[in-house]
Length: 604
Image (tube, rainbow, N blue to C red; front, side):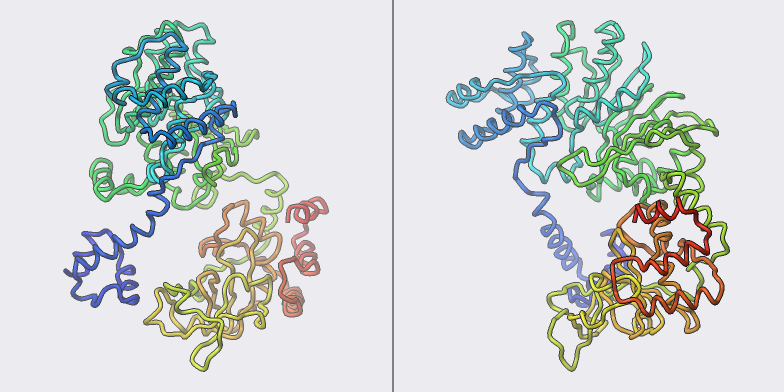
């Protein structure tokens, strides 16, 4: 097959093909054997399966308020292992127990979906000894189901149900009218619908009318069953057959109904198969198909919302500032963003900060938004890089304003060349700590400090043969002796003058300048507190990207000041600390107030 045919069939880039050739995964670029490509892709998939195919059970401890539930579920998991009981038999017994306690009849759908009750009498006897103190605020069934699911399935499908306290915050932020029609498009075991029901019931609304207003969709038929059971036991008047929770693919199925409120926690980072991607592409277009699954849920939600309807979602904090989410931010700015609240890491099972967002489907151009308890003008986001949803404290805004008003330049000229460090493809194979006549030192990110590099601490060596390495910039860029090396990953900016023409690994990227550019002066600015402030307020990320650096403000000071700063940088030993003499000169020339200086020193 030709390269073009391979690219179209497997949805990979030419750079990937070239890397595979360098790594000897394929023999030739001109005539590629599809079997070789299949083998490469299968091998890479197998490497990822360690996590996705994990059969470990983890109890989502942050999900329920009553921590006694955690002990109960652990006891049930122990019974499962001891008696070799299936997940469905466990869930059947739990539902049977809860329905008996609530004096509700067993719906026939439970047997249809889960099968018959376990025939293991010893297991049933032990299960019935467990005192499940069921409360509506503690979605016991949902917590049990998540605990029974393997880590791999949850990771692949983006399944992490929302803790009660997060659900409660969203539901409280939404104004439910008497006839509001509400949907959770990825309802899981129904936690959002449970809390919506309770809020509407507290307003003395008729029980039957409330149930008719609540809708839930999910692709997981077991989760849908649990959601229906959870709603079923909320009140004696509720009839199981009148509950509007369905097995439905929100993105791919046609939704004819219109809704006033969309609430929930859409899946994040869902891994789609190639056929699923093609299906989304065909249905909605390439732009939609390329979005993260949570962005797709937002877009589809707006298509089924009535005008002036409200959306309340739990989302990863990456929506606020990561460049790949620029399009969904731009879309949301066409409507009224009412509320954004950072709530940190509320999900113990995932290391991601989360936010709550409420948006009204309306095209008012003068909307005020409550952002972390502060009232701001939504239009502020439109002037941010990539429409970032980030807001600076007043004192930080004052400092940034002084930087922007001062004469300055940016590192975005064509003469400035950026390059990534070397990706070997196999560090164990290509990197050694033994010096030989054929190899040379290579700098990594951990050896880069502020201002300068301590070359004596560099102990890694590489034989530079670009044909064997996976990703290499033009050699002349590495050999440039008027360049700056910087850490690619790190919350604290670290830029260092590199004047030996040494190679760098991919944890240390480089910026190359013409000979007359004063890189020492640039390092004084790039390592300063004012640049750290700019970076955090504009991007708030741990990855330092080319487009970030190109936006940094480089103040134009007098030649005398530049010379002084340059000499101070040259005299500064590699350090993780700020050079306070350099800092004082910068503050003085930008005319920062004592309060602003204290703020910078206190923050960084």
